[in-house]
Image 1: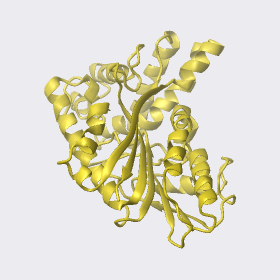
Image 2 (image 1 turned 90 degrees about the vertical axis):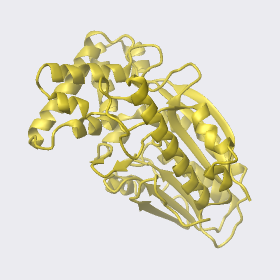
Image 3 (image 1 turned 60 degrees about the vertical axis):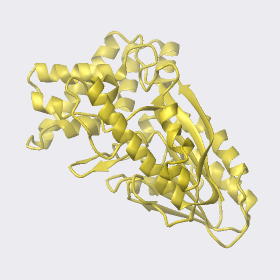
Length: 367
């Protein structure tokens, strides 16, 4: 997640995100071995100094809950008496109340709370594009499906809503901004890590076959977003200016762009001691499309599928609307927009899927 001066990015609250994004949890659960392997490779002394683990860009914490419990248990097995600190970080607009309700077991979600002693859980409402921890105090950092967000919109996209559909000069502006923000983010983490500490990032990206989120060979999700948002403009529901002001604050990178600052000895990331240990790409199938193949009910698929899109994209479309519009009118426009998408999926479901395409990286701090 990310923030800029005139616009705030936040996931839908009240537990909506975790309830509606089963695929995001699948990404974490299926990549859990990479995190546990990173922990196994660390030297973890049983000392009085707290071991700090952070989930950065955590939303409501639900999608990572099971993984966090296993990782903390693995650390506890290595260091029986060491204090453990679990820190959830996101923007100040994030639903931190839901995080603590989830962790405390107040929402019916299985939680590690109470099963691990000498554990302290905290939260930070600071963007991961800024410093989060003091130098040399972070042992293990994790982030999933979050660091594609950039700090500000580098250019308005004239005929699309996402950089993957932008004109070449517009796309270059997003890639340049993404490169700067990624290098800056990693530099912060490099200073925060203890020597021997690890970062494990599961980032939305573009794989070796050119695939990315919602575009893996079927109907393009971002093109569909653009189609119905432009249709609202054509129908006079929104203005041309509102269409133009709707741009996802995101940059999708390929493996080379993710790895560049970790391999370039002249980069501040490399100079701060951060090194690449592992990189790979994976595609995790959309669970709602997979379920549709089993039950075959198009209306049910559309009804289950659209909330997962809405959970993370609604803020972008809401931000594009004029602030002069009454809140009720804005809500009606958003319901109309997602209603059109849902009707389209129900009428012709084949090819619709939000398959997750991630670049998985494991990094370590030298010293």
